Image (cartoon, rainbow, N blue to C red; front, side, top):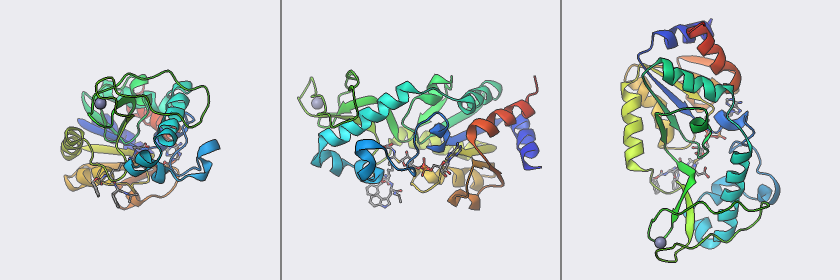
Length: 248
Ligand code: BV8
Ligand code: ZN
């Protein structure tokens, strides 16, 4: 029974990596990239908005979208799957969480060894000089919002995320690659594995001899690399695995 095997592997693991995507936040109520955007944004494609060109062309539209997403994240809560990930970190000292998500749900569930490959909604910075900026008060409703200006150079403030066509932060990428290379067990949770170089992480683990366990309700490109495929939701499977690995 694959889930029992995964729980046994988890119990015996020395170095675990949990690699998460938008599906990890879905049961908290944060829409994934594959689901249609709602409201003002429904006529846009996330991939078109998450680019430097879009911000250049219409800073208020893009800044407003990210502030809408930040407001949504602040209204929701981490779920039992996020808590299970934090429980794994508590049980397996050498474990690392690598997330593609820009929300703070892993942090709020207690995860500490956390790498954000694509930045965070909570770290705005100046698009011109790079100074970090304070988070402004959230807008009342989801709409276009002109980005605040930089205190140092009056440049426009941008979200602290990695857009399509932008390099990932090199420190985070090398730390994540190193963790994947050195782990003996990697969980890939709630990611379609389409966006590179982040999607490379499970392959790095597999190539270095780790067991790869995928948790996802539908087939993804990472089926090709998963040793064990657990078809289901993060908030159900992860707590179940932790209970089986470390019965109270
Ligand atoms: C780069 C932050 C070097 C922003 C994100 C042409 C020009 C330029 C670049 C490229 C190009 N062609 C290809 C590229 C590379 C590009 C890329 O990979 N494109 C893809 C589309 C092919 N990558 C980049 O641009 C990266 N940079 O390559 O730099 C470079 C530089 C210049 C020129 C060339 C190269 C930067 C990529 C980072 C983009 N930023 N996020 C923001 O959040 O707004 S990516 C964003 O989308 C997420 O962070 C995540 O990575 C991705 C979404 O994927 P997932 O997380 O997997 O989510 P998805 O919705 O797809 O899937 C959810 C899954 O969950 C599903 O499988 C679903 O079944 C499952 N699920 C649902 N419910 C649940 C569940 N699972 C469990 N439980 C549930 N309940
Ligand atoms: Zn500035």
